[in-house]
Length: 114
Image (cartoon, helix red, strand yellow):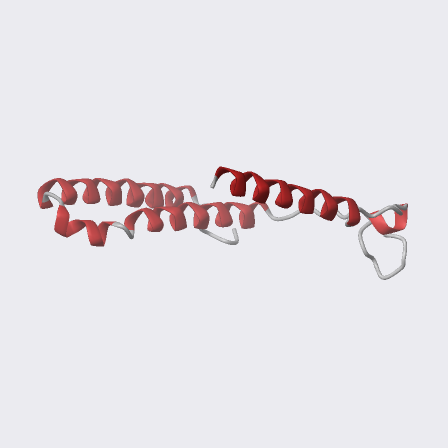
């Protein structure tokens, strides 16, 4: 069994080395490495400024999305745990979540335009 494992490892290693050698691009020039712009020279910087409000809304959405994924496993666990301690944890977690939402609302982050 040990010999078969070593033989398999050697064959897979040889195949990976051959694939990396054969797949290498040998010709590299400035046009192929530059971003595609329909054959024209770029007019300006590809780094355009973006709205900070949009970024804040995206971060808030990401935070609430992660918190929802933390709440989803609670449903199957209800049958296997102490209901009092589980409800205490759930209520505390939701309280912190709603407190954060209220703070963001109070600061005006959720308003798209001023």
